[in-house]
Each structure stands twice: as structure tokens, then as C-alpha cells.
Amino acid sequence: MIDSLDEKTSSPIKASVLTRDAAFDAISREWDELLEESDQHVFFLRWSWNRLWWRILRPSDSQLFIITCRDTQNKLVGLAPFYLRQRHTAGIPHVRELLFIGTGIYAQTSEYLDIVARRGYEFSVAETVVEYLQRSSDWDRLSLQDMPANSTMLAHLKRALGQQTQVEVASRSYWVDTTGDWEGFVSGLSSSARNNVLRRTRRLFNSHNCKLKRVETADELEPAMDELVRLHQARWQSKGEPGTFALPNVEAFLKEAMRASLAEGRLGLTTLEVDGKVAAARLDFIDNHIAHAFQAGYDPTHANQGLGSVMNGLCIRACIEDERVYEYDLMGGNSEYKESWTKNYKESVCLALDRPGTRSAAYKGIELAKVMGKSLLRATIPEPIRLAGHRLITQRHYK
Image 1 (cartoon, rainbow, N blue to C red):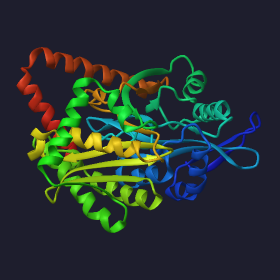
Image 2: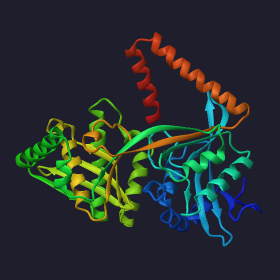
Image 3: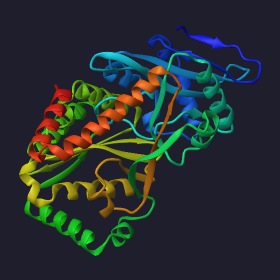
């Protein structure tokens, strides 16, 4: 496979596929210019985030497959940030899967992923991408995760791909409107949530010397990043879990992303000192007036003081007071505590399409066997043994 232009006469838009790292590097400026002129403008679709993910976290047996769409003046009007992965079962290769860059690994690193189209070109870009995919023999399965359910591209893609396309709701992300004032936000909370956060914050600040700090310079960044890692790991290890930063290369990936985001003015890294020692840290990425609450860490010795709730409230208040931020996105994952802060949410979906063929049929059979096997295990094996087995599988990913 080479980087080539697909000469088409049926459309004013031409598609090409980028498979080399050098080609990925060459479109950095065009990529972000396109993103900012699209309805898909979100931090996790920026070139720097995707390039860094590809360099540090890409799975083995994977290859770039970025489809670019250009008009008759050679202007970039759309791109599909894909990569190909060879799936294996028991060491045997079978289905070739096409995914979004940023997905397909054990840790969730990206949300709100999509095919990017310049405004006004959504239909044409979706049709061009699908036409290219239909003529390509390089893939067996399309698995596009974490697409916004309200994406302007989703309906176009589903229509172009055909009736066999499956779209299922995958997750829910809660968000806080930060365009009002703090008093208005607090008054909108339930009485228990309002009293809880205000009482805990007041009690912590009255009984300890507390200082909230926002990282502003490169000299402040390095120690703050180390504190985030330390506190995140301490919190999860106190619960008997390994913690995200135990996964291979995740710490290196996030630290480099934070350095780049600070230089670009898109980093929100906040620490809370309690009696002179950092006891909580929160990492946000800020883009297009949205602050994405990406990662956090808390000192487990302060667990009985509700440090997590206190830090959430402080960061929400900081975003309300920041004129750049219109929305504080709590992102996906555990939603129980997030619902106490807001009832606003967005849904993400997974779009999947299995191409007819022996490899896809074999993959479906393998997946069905896995589901049936799990059901049988749940019915016949005691829960403590099943949990121990799950723990061993999880630890294998972290090692």
C-alpha cells in the first residue's frame, strides 16, 4: 500500500490514503485548520494528540490508514483518522479491523472521535470516504468507537455504508454549563449535594492550610505531573487496583501531551496543597471553549474528608470564572458521582460493519463463542474464582 491519489471522475472530491508516518507529519497544519472549520472541533481530534498516540500507544500489528479528501483546488476538506489492526485469536491472525486512531487499546484515551469534514462538505466527505472503503480490499471489519450520537457525520455515514451497519449507544458523558455564575450553579444542585460540597470544602479549608494552584509555566509543570501520577496511583492502589499509569507507556504519553498542551495554551493542570503537601491534582484539556476533565488523583489518607468532591467543586468553580470555558466536560466512565453535579449529558455510539467474507464470519464465530463461554463461566464457576481470573487478565495488560 502506498500514499496515492484515487483518481475519480464522479466527484469533485478526491480521496487518498496515508499509510506512512512521514505523510502523517506532513499534514499537521492542514489537519488542525480543517478541524477548526468543522463541526467536529474537539481536543481529541487534534493532530498533535493523534500523532502522539500513534507514536507511543499504537498496538502491534497496526498500520496507518488515514483517508484524506481534497477538492479540485487540492484543499483538504475532510479526513478519516483511521488505522488498520490485525486481530488474533490464540496467536492466529484473522480479521483486519479498521478503527479510529486513539481507540483499540486497553486504556480509554480519546472521546468524541469522528470523521472530520469542512462545514458544508459533510455529505460529500462521507460519500467519498465510504466509496474509497468499498473499493479497498485491505479491511474486513469497521469498528468506529466513541462517535458522538449527535454527530453531523453519523447519519451520512450510516446511509452510505448501508443497512448492515450497526450503531449502538456505548457511553454517556456528563457536562456542566459554565456560562453562568457559581451561585447559580450551586443553587441548581440537589440540597444534599449542595450542602455536602459546601460543608466539606469549608471544613477542609478551615481546619487545614489549603492552597489551590494552577500550572502556568514549564518549571511548575514537571513536579505537578509527578504529583498527579503519584496521587492517581495511590488512590487506586488503596482500592486494590493497579491504576492507569501502570499501563505501559501511558505515563510517557500523558506527560508529553501535557507539555505540548501547555505550550499551546490548552492545559488545565490544578493541584491542591493541604498543609504544604499536594493532596489532590486534576488534569483538564481545554479546547473550543470546553474543559475536558481527563485525569485526577487524590491522597487516600484524606478520603474521609471528601477530597474528591472538594476538588471537583473547586475545578468547576474555576471553569465558571474562566471566560475561555463555556462547558466543563466530566467525560465518560463511572457516572454515579457525575450525576450529582449535573443532569446534562451526551451519548457516544459505536458504529460497526462486518464485510462479507470468511475472515469476518470466523471473527463473528469467535466472538459468539466468547460470549457463550462467559455465560457458561458465570453460571458454573463461583464468583470469587471468576473475579480472581478477571484480575489476572487485567494485570497481564498492565504488565
